[in-house]
Image (cartoon, rainbow, N blue to C red; front, top):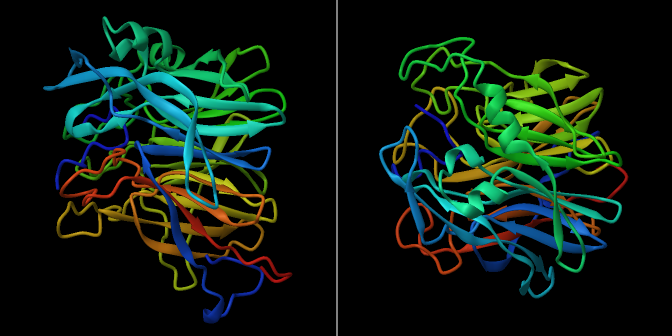
Length: 386
């Protein structure tokens, strides 16, 4: 299966801690904001919640290279303030690149991350896959720096750089196990801001990029992992998020893999519950609370071996809590409607974008079932034994 973004199959269709939390302290899960347009990244800036909305494409349609359907691009992606009490949302930035890819979903603003007084937002896709689309050539794959007044500047052309990097590799043979191959592709997705720049996980090129303060891009690692069963989804690594963990960076992947990165080398990490069950299926987001806990968002269920809907629990995802010091992990919240990314708020609770492939007005039938894009709050324990 050729993978160009995270949602190729949509048309088919923890509590980990130093001490366990008793059942009475199970977290509450509350959806408090609705009406968002394919929400992805979440971040807090000066105590206020920001949400990246990938949008719904636009009126400029074109043939997508290598695929049997059109893409339709426009400027419907945005970044919005969301009130955590009332759920009301207002735009901070509008007019950002969005492309609807038919049965493959929508790409637009994905990851958000904040460092000091700077907001970084990653726009998905790459100019190479948006031929003749002016806004796609200007914004697709761009890491942008956003100010509190809503103005923004381009920080680094991740999508263009990573796409060029992939062209040195042989592409896989569809439906055949093809080790050490790489699609000629880029879809920068998750971002982690630092004091000096940022790290970006590119779901298309299977790379982790380091961006320094002047926007120079260095590819730290390239995960060439291939699933021996090419029928599993996805058949390659597809890194989607990056977070700081014990002993180095942790990169979550849509394949359900987790890797620990030290410098320019990496090794796999298996996250299991107390019964030995692997907990990561299709990771799209990760964040930490600064107290040794990392939270991974599985956007949907049914990991390898992949079982397509409707016989699987594909339409619902969960959040896994993993303590990097003890290695303990468990499911924090389950049966979430296409959760995507997460951030810990100033109140110590977890905020997760949900309905990540649902528009602002709702879509009948699966997978949205009339729901709109939303934000969900999951309470976290705040005691000394959390």
